[in-house]
Image (cartoon, rainbow, N blue to C red; front, side, top):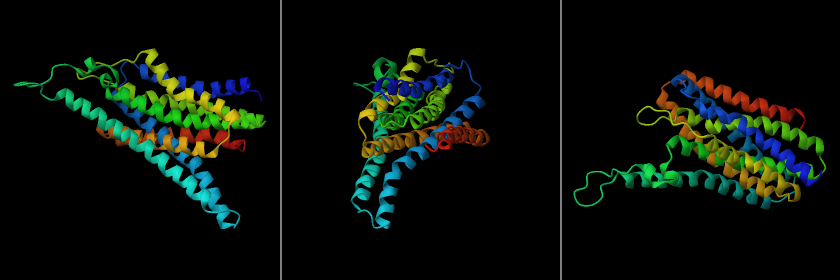
Length: 291
């Protein structure tokens, strides 16, 4: 399959992420609906953690099997294992550092300035940039980044299959990944449905902001398809998959904190179940074809 046709497949697979973006524009979702949406997003992301870690562990598992059968050495085991640990650590700890940096900015904004100063009156929004964003928007960005790393690895799989002449497999991957990305778009914007300011007024994200999140999350599928069409490297896939897993893992801990504040264990359970089922159903479509 030519590069043009392959890139079209990548665009289709990544483009369906926009289907879940309108969730972020809900006018005034009830508290119970916000809790359910948040929990469902956690379920989707938990599935993605399992999905990406399984794929990242596969070359390590294969190398260990080769050692067991006396057909290989421990070198690839340590090589892929090191990439696995480093990627997971960077993906997780980089977001820890990011949140600590944002906390320092907020603390500096609240600290007294000058002799006799009681409190800084300048709002965070006056700073501009990420510091002006609400916690819900920053969380949505983190989710989009994590999903984007995951989708880059998916794009690599599409590009490699199409570039190797496996048209049926590439097409099946596109269908499965397209369904996956539709649920991922919802996962990105679910926190925005609960974005309320200190006065109880709904912060409504613009369509431009939502589309930018969709581009961050879905665009890497196109880029990965392009790279995968002419370049095959399992080590690269392991790095991007573990980076995605680490970042998504951190986001899940943040969303669980939001869920705890709602004090609705029943809705948390329902949402987790819905999200996990959605993830496994879409994954089953890919597996059904032997992909």
